[in-house]
Length: 347
Image 1: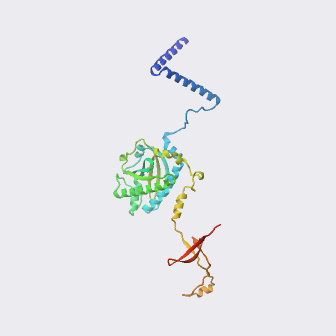
Image 2: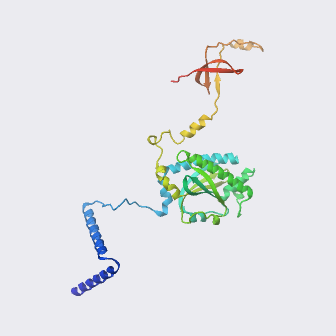
Image 3: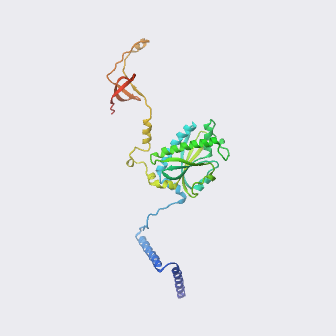
């Protein structure tokens, strides 16, 4: 019985070898057998020594269903830029609508372009924008609630959830408000990205029906950043959807956090603060002289009385009460003036 089994196995091997010869040459079969023997030998050696034998290249686990979350967690600087944009856009919304608001960066998610379109209602203010020098097209999306309430507030109406009724189109006024908000968004994106990447946003196309917004490959993977604009009576949503292919070339740059040894400035806000300080108005003052009077002398003062002042050779110039310069009192172009002599040295 054993001999019969052996003959059967040999016959099967012969048939398999014959079939393999029809597909592979003898040299290819020998190379495959050699590689299998080498792998078995390496596996036994690795198991015996307790070590892991690495293969060619570096292998790491990757979850395609959480691609967006993985990319976001690996790019901490991208989240910093989004937080910076939220602060800028909050001020822009206030200047545009003249109403208090709070813009909050909620987070990011990864999705395909076609799946993202399926999440949008009709109508939605969908804007395709370029962010050169970054390659590709990004989406700046305002939901129906934000556009409707922003328009009502702009023209003096109230902002309530009841205003967002079922409709399939935006009015002319609502489209104008949407375009105004888009302009603010593009300006704020340029400011918030400036410290790291000099981007120049440019509008490409606007759609209100998601079914007609087909400027991308349906399978294009997007990283969608969500911002909630919270008003007193209601709230709206703005989303920035960037293709992952647009972000990937800047992965290394966006992975770097702000560290003193890697940057010459003093942090993210240093350039912004310096620019603001240069345009800030401050009050300058100077004490030309002093006089000491008793309370009785002050009571006796009358219109036309002259109070003699004790004046020194120099006067001190103050900026918001802080002494900064010493100078001489005089006149220039028929106006009282102080000629600066030297700077005050503060301890």
